[in-house]
Image (cartoon, rainbow, N blue to C red; front, top):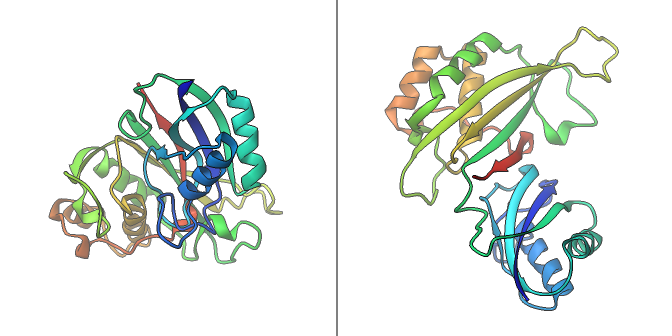
Length: 256
């Protein structure tokens, strides 16, 4: 029976060269396709909601694949998880309409970026946060969030080689949150900052380029007017550096 399956995938991106299949590199897509092809005894092509960069993590990546099988969703899920063993996990598997496509049908995606903002580095979670030593001005960063909300041309924050027909995207929400480190002996020391952003789509490196530039505002190296000028200039050379991949998480993808 020809069936369209929708899966929600969680992964630690540290040892992978991103989502998309690449020659002679280990990627999330290639690992999933390999495991599914073994379980279903046929060549399986997995379609993701979008490409995450090398080193980027996900709690809620969505993908779909079509297979001729009588196997249940639960058996497929457990089979894949037993083969890949831990670094990539299928959290949900459901049968969906034959026309469903994880990328084409997505209406919004939400990313979180984690920053550790203190002098001391972090031993345990250093692979999942960007360590920024100097104290950041959160008010300045929140003002930058207000500037990017709505529909804009984000060409200034686009990575090279980005496949697209337009650089215009609509940001539905963007905000910074402070989070206490509950393992810290000093309960008053709130040293973790999470940037949460939701949009109808993202350009290559867009979130990381936004973060790299907004952090410049947080360090008072640029002001909010300069940030706005960078956005309007549509020139990547004027924006800040690309923030490290390991602080970025794809949280969820929404559908109609």
